[in-house]
Amino acid sequence: MSRERRAVVVGGGISGLATAALLARRGWSVELLEAGESLGGRAGTWEADGFRFDTGPSWYLMPEVFERFFELMGTSVDEQLDLQQLDPGYRVFFEGHDEPLDIAADVRTNIERFEEIEPGAGQVLERYLDSARSTYELALARFLYTSFDSLRPFMDRRVLGSAHRLGPLLLQSLERFTARRFRDPRLRQVLGYPAVFLGSSPDRTPALYHLMSAMDLTGGVLYPQGGFGELMAVLERLARAAGARLHTGAEVTEIRTGAGGRRGTSTQATGVRFRDAEGLERVLEADVVVSTADLHRTETTMLPRHLQTYPESWWARRTSGPGAVLVMLGVDGPLERMPHHSLFFTRDWRRNFAAIADGRVPEPASVYVCRPSATDPSAAPSGQENLFVLVPMPADPQLGRGGVDGGGDPRIEAIADAAIDQVARWSGHGDLAQRIVVRRTVGPADFSEDLGAWRGSMLGPAHTLGQSAMFRAGNRSRKVDGLYYAGSSTIPGIGLPMCLISAEIVADRIARELS
Image (cartoon, rainbow, N blue to C red; front, side, top):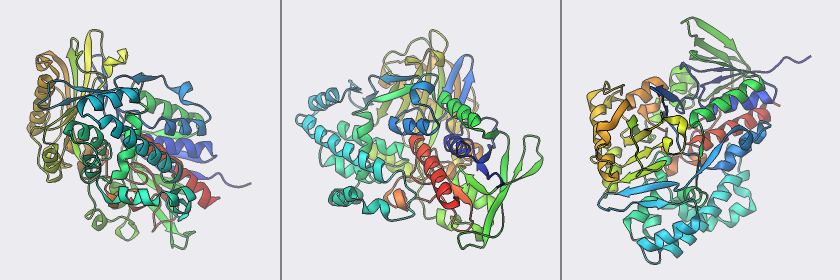
């Protein structure tokens, strides 16, 4: 009788939970080790005085990716989540303009609103979205669900037939692509902002990623009732139901190796060494190790130098996504001028992005605000509001840590104060600061120290041309057999849907290589 195959998954964020669930469902004996006290990783939650905050992702995009994952687990999104359509999907406040722009759930309405701002822009947007949709469908069918371990995705007839269009999209920036089609800076900003979801800026992101507009401008934005913490709870339940054993307070300190690699290397992953919640050193043996922790931390702290596929010298040549200051606010009374999602764009946002890239704090900064209490009554006590404010910053842990009730490092609290004042003035809620009853901040040092994030980045390596698709870090060690990677540091990239895809392609690769 053959021995049961054993896998250790490092990290309990979305990619770790999804990887553990998929491997367990396929018959593996799975142990997941999460260093923190709770599961979820960047997609965590924090509660205080009846307020519940998502501490990370807050946009539910690419719904077909979630549906595909749940189908692999023998269930469906409808069975597991209560999704609400947001309308408007989001509201955009522009510096120097009194009226904001609402992005609707209906594409025809968005075309009409573009036309109102710039005559002729409606028809241009139609063509833009047609291109975005076809590019997105091609990426989903041929590029996102692949490990790039062969040339097969590029030999597809549809890909070859689109080469004349894909080439120019790769070789020009999203900023230039939108500027050639729209004159009004506000419309360019709406179409360029998805670069921030990719940990980059419009001037550094390939125009290929205009495909992101096929999601929010045509399909609308969804929200899972209970927040993204509920999504993580569902993944946890599915992983446990499949047989995975999930451990918190278990910090992996070493990926153990031995002789006998199967793919021509001389080294094989044999398990991990970790420190448990009581501080005791333990060892778990395994046939496969999948690290979904930050790839920089995995490679440079859990492996000796001669076994690192991505050593410090490799990271020195890479571009980090931005850092962030997060501000979680419980507010007394209504905030009716802000819907579920709001964006606050500065007039000169090239200067904004340049400051971040140069390691300087932008003043003023473009800001994102989520008000989940607009949709979800469980996010805040009755008569009060829940605000999550995200201020993109340089990925620099030296900016400091946040804290509760103004107890963070002075620079972080000053950035938070400026953002609160900006949101209050631009949204027309001038007394916002006086109505705050709960406050917590998070800074780049928190991302670095609590999540092990490279350079304190909010998201991971930016999606520049040299860090996208086949140029991004791969999902298998080239030095150690049986060691695989998943998560936002690796292919296909940043964001909850990408992390789900990452889990699926690494599980498929393991099945293919170890069958």
